[in-house]
Image (cartoon, rainbow, N blue to C red; front, side, top):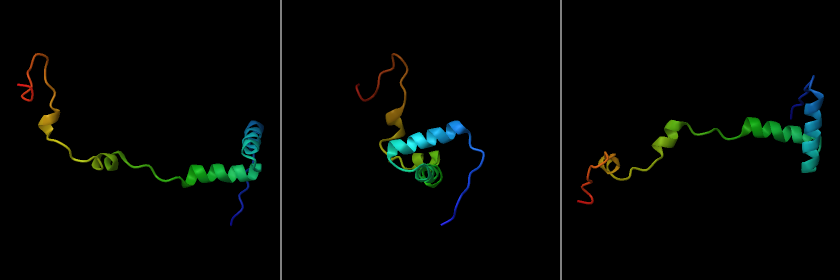
Length: 77
């Protein structure tokens, strides 16, 4: 496992890191590892194309046509 040294961190960031670590009951170093892992190793998001392609095919295009005001639908005629 590698070591990582981060220099010139603002004092407020260090205080916030230590406070967050304290809330989780772990060291600041462990909290830092946790933050880095979450930010860098999270699963990639699906693209819009992948999401759209995953939508099941239901009905016909005509089922979703918009009717103008006053126009009667064949379904209710």
